[in-house]
Length: 219
Image 1 (cartoon, one colour):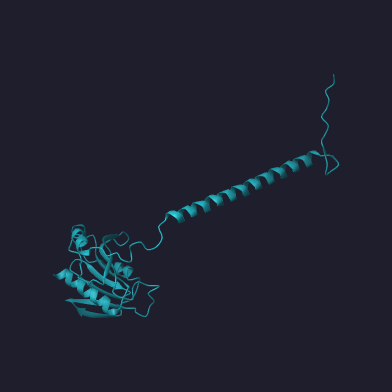
Image 2 (cartoon, one colour):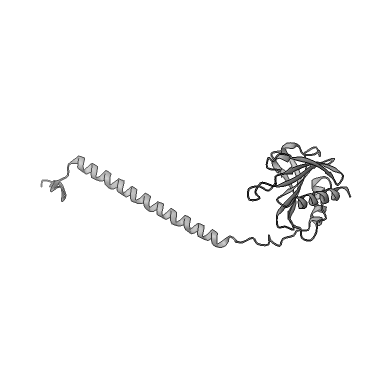
């Protein structure tokens, strides 16, 4: 019995069977459209997953300032423990009750190879003030590059003498506290460290902190 040959499929749009070239083109178009739909579906799916992940983060991450507003760490206690790590006595200024110490810890600047004791305060006026006492690996005062980095590249504007030290003065009070943490700064060199007292508080606040910091290191 002779084998029947399969008749070409008549395509409705053409009113006749497809040619081989038309069949190849149709399949290529179908493959392209399938991949395009798949890519779009994957994109939408990925977007939905990302949005869901972001929503989860918003739900689980604590909002607000936590205890920062009222936080006041015990600088004296932390200073006693830090002196051994730092290798020398660290500053412990006797500020009043209206000064709130937000942080007090030993830090290490890997770029400048400077170890420094840092205290961050909220001043009585509600502004920022910081103490940074730094030495290099040879237990000598940190150099000018570290000072420049701590002071955001600000230039020295004068000098002053108080609390038994000669200080470099940085008066940038005309700058905005929104764009800089250094509106006032006092810098001096101790026998084994460089001392920086800076912040966005008033001149009186930053100088008062500098004086009390120096006194705490000579008592």
